[in-house]
Length: 109
Image 1 (tube, rainbow, N blue to C red):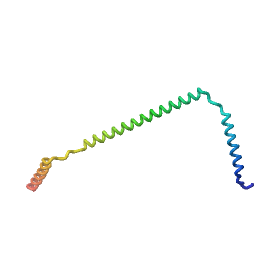
Image 2 (cartoon, rainbow, N blue to C red; image 1 turned 30 degrees about the vertical axis):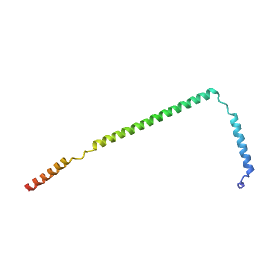
Image 3 (cartoon, rainbow, N blue to C red; image 1 turned 90 degrees about the horizontal axis):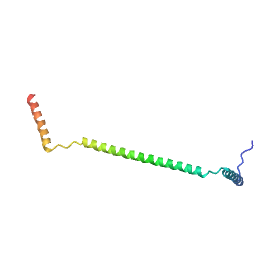
Image 4 (spheres, rainbow, N blue to C red; image 1 turned 180 degrees about the horizontal axis):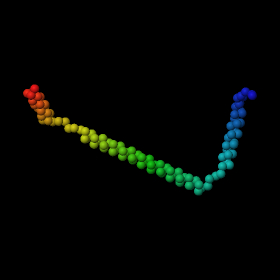
């Protein structure tokens, strides 16, 4: 079995030229499309693009609506969880109640 021989530049150039000619011949033999087929394919492509745009817009709208609902729910939860700070009178009343309870326990025991 003979060893591998590295092709020269001229040999590679000739192979590339043959391949190019073969590809051009194959392309030239390809049948041309008629105008009706081209128009039909173009219309189908436009319909696909329109459907994709519509789907994308609907998805963006759904995401925006979900974000708005989530923000509203978070705001409502924050409002519900927000406990107003007690006033001075309420703090004093709580302190007095603790003091009275402690005094009552001391008298019993």
